[in-house]
Image (cartoon, rainbow, N blue to C red; front, side):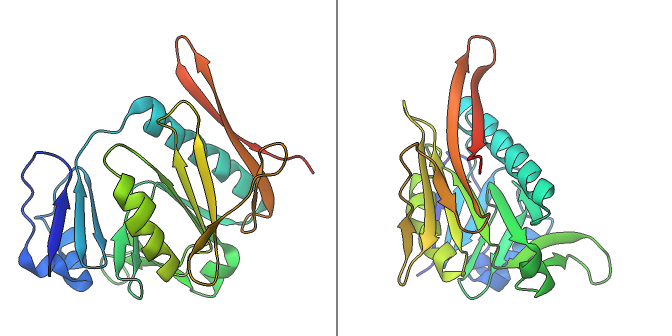
Length: 227
């Protein structure tokens, strides 16, 4: 049965043809697709989120995660980073979503385990990332709890994604789960004595912290454990 979950009181017209992945992709690249909000296709369910991002617990955190991981990946020449807004497609997992951050290793790109797809052949207008990134990050917001913690956790595993970083900064403490593939699902990584989590994909350990600034608000730091 086709379903659509809309997390904001605003009308979004979803065509009946969009309730399978090929139809959803055609709709995404059509002139009828909404200009704002996040719309995901997750194993036959369409999830629409038109809510604005919270600045301190989402927007600033997302900017910090991207900047610091991008610098780490570039420094070590590991591969390529993709920011929020890039559409991820995985046909085997029946999912289309815009993660908050993605990392693809050089090996993944070279082997074409993940590919940048053009909207028109030979146009060099790449609009989709198809396949299995090595690492995906999602930041939990008030309207994305079910999507991030249940639906996408299941579909990202089915998509063959090695690591799923699930971060919730809405509470008094940051909840940072570094999830790695197990035999039948993702398993949480246990932090070391100092609170660092080991990433197999990036071959490094990280700790996410924040400090409060009276003018700037929360400032986030993704610390790498010095070897």
